[in-house]
Length: 352
Image (cartoon, rainbow, N blue to C red; front, side, top):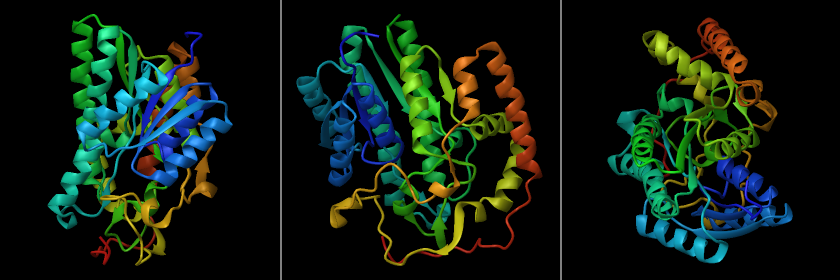
């Protein structure tokens, strides 16, 4: 690694995985460019990075607008220096059955959660390729391999990111470029999204257990940035298990998720009728609140991932261990009985 501080840009940096990742890079002394729509979250992330010894520049950007993304990249390079690492994290979503998602809302999710990655990748490559240096990290999901009910817009975007990234990677290989692109596939993570994503479910949304803390995900992203020659990383045993199960038992997963996918994504608490959503504007704009990296599931979230440690530190043995662990997790998945009680009824929320 160069003796000069890395210049890293993180999208979706105001909360969740993006914020935890930005802060981890900052703690290593990086100069970090922060992109998000929410001013309060950006200010909070900037303060945390500075407290950790890093340097930060925060810019309010809507990732669905290419011109805004491009202008921000120019501003980052002018203030911080040439970009070494670009991390695409920003997304939004809707929790609802597909037929209850308005077309404009579905388009909005796609523009932010898929095209936002496309635009971020393009502005990064426009700067990295002429220098023949740089790394792009896409933050993916186990749901990019195995879609689940109630998240059709998000799952569609994550699948698209996989295909897009593979295409770009082959082009970089054809050009014999020293610019790299990699993906980190994530498990369920305790982020604020479950409190602010647009939902038309009767009860409060939740990540499907097991749940990991954002710092676990952030360590996976930073490791990927440091080892860009590896095509893909998985964080969490359930991510590896999901990918394996989809490969060998997709029809069984269809039926399993049809039975359990509605209840497992909701708590037993009714949704707040005054709940705000971040689909069209950041939720901290009216409230001025900084939500931080963590969501409301701290008591249920894991701060470590044995699978990730093994995959990062042990090559051949690690691959075998991950495979065995995946099969074991897959077996537990299919043995698990559905949650007691049915909460599959959905309704439109009064708030948009």
